[in-house]
Amino acid sequence: MSGSVWFSDTMILGLLAQVDSATGLDATLERSVDLVGVFFFAVSGGLLAVRKGFELVGVVALSLVTALGGGIIRDLVLGATPPTAFDDVLYLVVPLVAAVIVFVAHASIEHRFATPVQLFDAAGLGLFAVTGAVKASAFEANAVGAVLLGVVTATGGGIIRDVLANDPPHLFHPNSRLYAIPAALGATAIVIAWRNDFYSGGFAIAIAFVVFVVRLAAIRFGWRAPKPRGAA
Image 1 (cartoon, rainbow, N blue to C red):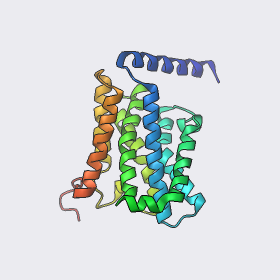
Image 2: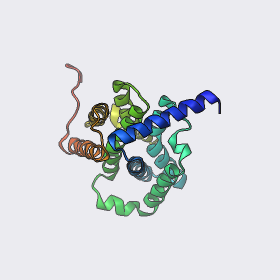
Image 3: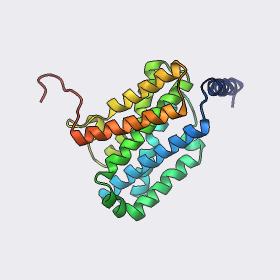
């Protein structure tokens, strides 16, 4: 590794340490929140794979890409390489465990929840909107960029999941309930809090929960984004 890259990484770590001191961030909490999001997204991918009749490899593959796709895209855009998914072994272990759980207990999960794929997807959406915006802010992305990366982190894995399963992605379906908009609102709240020094782990969890509830309400009540006037 070159000296200039080492210096850049050191500066980033120093910045994060200063931010932690100033705002009371808990890196362990944020990592835990991120891993919970990975688990939820992996479950949604595995359940869709089972529903599509995929075998073991297909279930594992769809779980992995759903859980890790958005975060990998975010890290590559930020230049945070290697992406966390390939640098922290838990980011591979957690979705693999989720895939095994789904493979063995999918019938119980389907029986317990009315729309389990959408439920776990909504949970991952809220958590990743938050962690994506936080990481982008920590890497000094501008406000709009940080919000966009929060949305990309939250929706990227789900888009890849749906494309590989030959389903229309929620984001681009003509009758889609609110999907990217709750993630964008959540990411915006995080960026505003970060830039005004009132961000905290508790605030992040609260925002993730709000995004989750809004997404479920949109599914339940049929809330949609407006279409162009005169469009079919």
